[in-house]
Length: 134
Image (cartoon, rainbow, N blue to C red; front, side):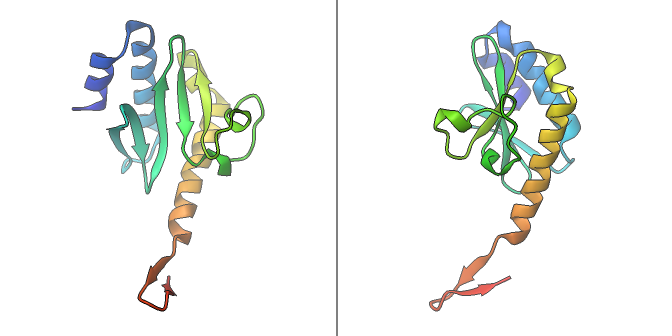
């Protein structure tokens, strides 16, 4: 099932338009090799690992970042630090204009750069003696 079909079939009309616009925004702004899949009943977008996801609420949606704790802190914008979320940070999106703000573009770009960096420094351990090969 495609993500757009999933959004149409499983979400109430109040947030369906916002989720559809969010999906199209991410498809426009993520690199062409980005993958999109439904995981844990929400759309996830991945480059080398899970980069971000969309989650619905009654009156808004969230653009979440599973490794958001590594992003630059932006109090009042990038939320989740004070909510006992260990790694996840998120943006509350209440309108389509929120996606096209400079702040959203900046955070998404930083998350893409972080994903690339994390993929490069990932080390593999082989054998009994736990030697590291780069």
